[in-house]
Picture 1 (cartoon, rainbow, N blue to C red):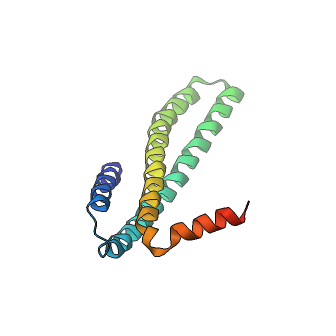
Picture 2: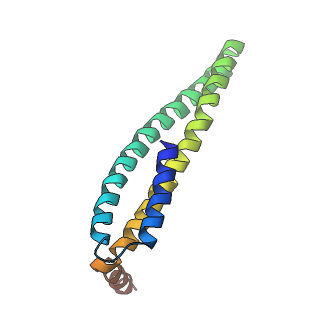
Length: 124
């Protein structure tokens, strides 16, 4: 999944730069679908990461209570899995945020930028 989202980021960035105004609508629709896929993947990985973090904390507390070395093995195994999950979730989160920015750039012609500007000015 990581390679896929990084490749898609490269693709969409190059497509935006070479995009004519009439192609923006199609590109925006495609991007919106991909954002949905990647956002779903991000949610799944968030749940998995939180579960592994909780299991790791429970194992640490279990070691502190029991002081059995077997539990340290469990903590180490969980940490070996938790660190890559955190890294992967970090990449997914940042990449989806970039996709949101690309979508906003493609939406500039649709009046979105003017709306954001007027909403920001209205909050002052």
